[in-house]
Length: 148
Image (cartoon, helix red, strand yellow):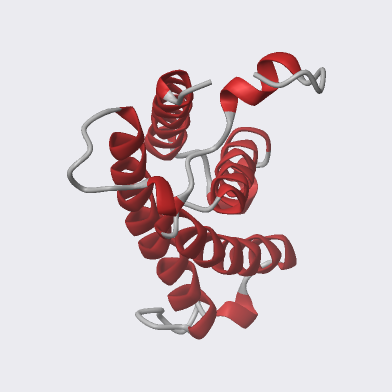
């Protein structure tokens, strides 16, 4: 630790992509693997929302223009934020985790507090909750093994 007075914050430094080495065992490599898996899920989720925007697989009553404005707004938001998060997570960039957490927490809030938009889907809420807890676990463990 340095004498800059930042204290315990320095111990929780993020893992950077140039820190990743496939031959290295430990929590940092597990965190990067988790981020890549989360990036895959975020990419699929973003593409799902873009397919809704573009009308792929939609019936005549399910087209984007026929949906309520709240649904349209939420769908475009998640279509953009999930793909941006996927890129950031794949690169293991600190901003990627922030964007992903923002999108995930927002989806949980939409599911729980605004069920008229997408309907309440407990599997989505539970799945995102588990992924957030797993990310926090891996990030804390990786930060603990970083040299001081």
